[in-house]
Length: 281
Image (cartoon, rainbow, N blue to C red; front, side, top):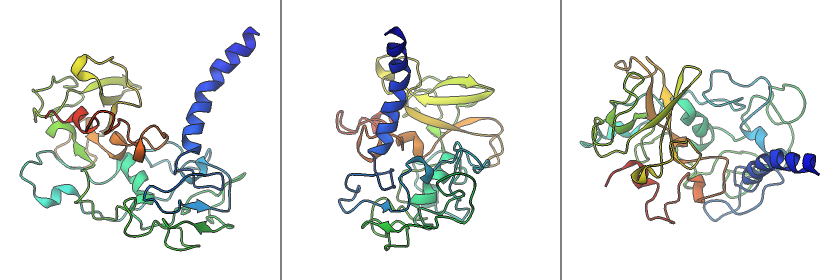
């Protein structure tokens, strides 16, 4: 009986995580359920019941991607980014679109089919793409196209000037490996919350604690806002060390059904709760 209880305790966290992905619109296989985010018919591919394969592969993934075991071909094309608007209040430096955001955009910029992958489902590596099955759903261009349809919110396009900036220094810069702790009010832009950090294998992991106003818990969890390290020299020329940047996955966790549109923190349970986690207004 004790062994059974221990086994249950070990398996349960994986089961909960797997259920979250399976029940989300990111499950694009035949087991996917539920409506699309725009109220139409969800994307679904008839050629596999696998769930994780649409983004990840256990072998032969793209090692250049800043996403684990990445199974999608990346779009190395150009994007128009928020800083190109010339907004006077935008005081951060921008790095080129990359980091984990380029993984998200490999579907969500609408330029490539969702099955434009490195390895098919099943055993072994196969670089030919999906060989069987059709796409369905009002969120795709057509029954065999597999790209996100135009005119829906999930298709961001390559013009990102009307979206939350990604690849931007958090708090206008100032936080770095040599100055990892700067209290709120002392960052380059005082209208941002303080940053927490830890170092793992020489790499800085940064986050904004959702409860920082009441002291926080000092623990990096998936319901905090993640900030992503861009390495020295990766992007704009002034960067000389690791710094925290805002990326797509700062606000969105692609593996959860906890909040609509995969938000890490609800914007409805507490009005604008996600926005006000970072922005001191």
